[in-house]
Image 1 (cartoon, rainbow, N blue to C red):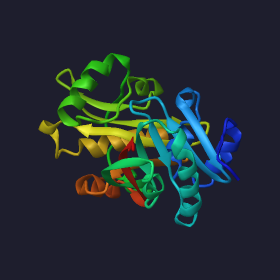
Image 2 (image 1 turned 135 degrees about the horizontal axis):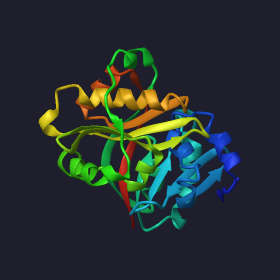
Image 3 (image 1 turned 45 degrees about the horizontal axis):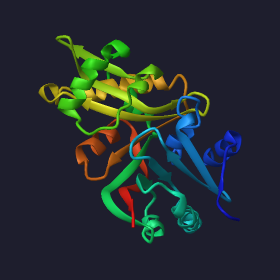
Image 4 (image 1 turned 120 degrees about the horizontal axis):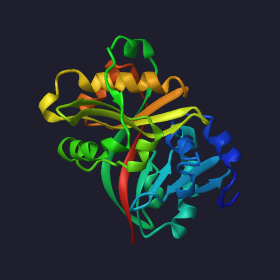
Length: 256
């Protein structure tokens, strides 16, 4: 079966929903909030997403180990029609399928984690308030100081799923989402940070706990991505009840 563009959200939801944690970000992008920025490609039961809402566009290709070979065939066939430069999230081993067409600048191994033990999370005292558009300037200042280079689209505040702690007129801790979909029952945490001057006080755990409690009212699966060598963050999420469920690699791709 050759690669084809897929435009049927029902078909995509059925295929991706077989592993909602591995494909949490893609399922979230099926919502109207992100759908206009997406292009989807399918070969058999394997699905790849090209997200155009950022520059450069981002390619998401995740496969269980047993499906790596068939996903590699999809990527090799898709390579000629991909943009000349893009960022990619790829399950281990899939970079080789694109290596003949693109130069890959590796950005490191990452873990996909999922909330699997909410009892641990329940032991953390939550803190924070829901942030809105009026908090955007303060939030930008926080990210500039505490999390430069993170991926934050101001539209994400419109989800109503950003929780922050304010102090002295500034936001000093925040936990938010990259995607949130009550329709597909998934959320992916993102843009979580604490101002350097108040680190070590448990504010990061507190805002994550508050956000997860809020998300639990509308979704069944909460996932996140974290760089594998960010040991402190991995341990924090483990203490909060998250566990590692898959690995993937990030890379910048430039056409040869």
